[in-house]
Image: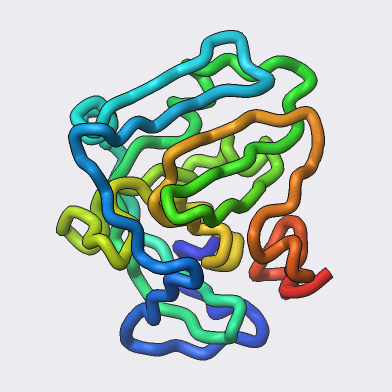
Amino acid sequence: MTLSEGRLPPGQKWVDKITEYAVLGVPKVDIGAYRLRVRGEILNPLEFDLDQVKGMSDLEMVDDLHCVEGWSVRGVRWKGIPLRKIVDLAGPKVSATHVFFRCLDGYSTTIPIDETRKGGCLLATFMNGRELEAELGFPVRLVVPGLYAWKYAKWVSEIIFMDHYEPGYWERRGYHPRGDVWKEERRE
């Protein structure tokens, strides 16, 4: 069963709105200087400015958001770049097994490369019909259906394809490497 079918994962309860966290603070974004860089174990390094990112934001979807703390929000509407599009443009080498996301605030997280190929995985630029607000991750927020929201990195500035697992901010603090909501992969 997928998240879009509306089933509540184990250990979760429905709430009406997202509680936003900024564990390292909300960064100030210089719109003119912002670049989304893609590098690592790939054939084609990429770099996009904000206008290019917005121009590629053509996937819209509705899905539920699940926090590791046990709350879930039904039917969040996202619009952004399908992560598969970035993967296809970058051309990961066979050696690439994980994708590391670095953010403007110093936050980071890692997902297995197989997550990037899922249909709903995207780099969101809009949420619930509006451009992302600063607190919600403007200009780019990672969305990975089926994983806990700590994997939904905000303020993404760099995507690094790696040949190994590199723990991100919460993973270094004992959170599970994958974070599958259906398997309750909360802590290692």
